[in-house]
Image (cartoon, rainbow, N blue to C red; front, side):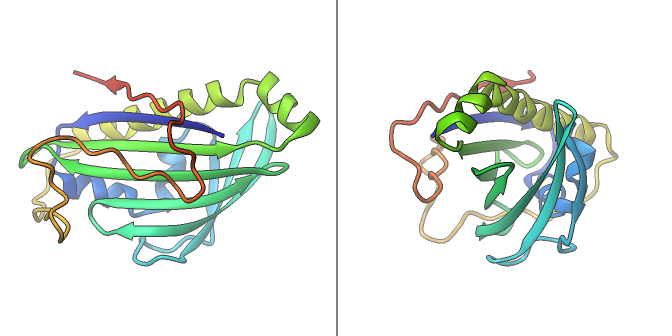
Amino acid sequence: MATIERSVDVERPAADVWAVLEDVRQIPVFSPSTVAVADAPERLSSVGQRFRQTVVVLGHRYESDWTVTDLEPGRRVAFEGTIGLGGRYCLVEEVEPQGPNRARFTVRITFTMPLGILGRLAEGLGVQRRAQHEAEEVLANVKAHLERSPAAPSPPVSSAPGGDDLDGERRLLPPCPGAEAGSSARTVELGP
């Protein structure tokens, strides 16, 4: 099992960042490997929603079926999915306000590749390295899109009940179900 975590600060209100994330139909705009999203809701609104993502990697087309497993509107969404021949993914996206016109967008991907020859083949093809690169490109593309778009008034994104603000300290995204503690997560800041 491997975990990739990347973050980027976006010079836009958290609500603007969330508006992009809650419409998974836009994934092909930001993800270079995604060629289509099907059977997707207009916007993410509840746990259990599903969609299908089609990606092209090394000239091969793969279908990923995703299910929303956790949702805190305006702040956090987690998905679980499968891809290819037995690969399993958990994707967590989180938006943290950094002030009225700035937000941190964090992506955590935890994935398990199949065992045996298929897992060794995936490792040989650099699946983890490609996933890291893809996560960085998605973050950079979302940031660029939002920062060049005209500003629109956005409602404030409130903190979750229960005091999830740790006196300004950044909290780690909780792992997906089944993720091992002490994984090889690494946070890289993109942009200024």
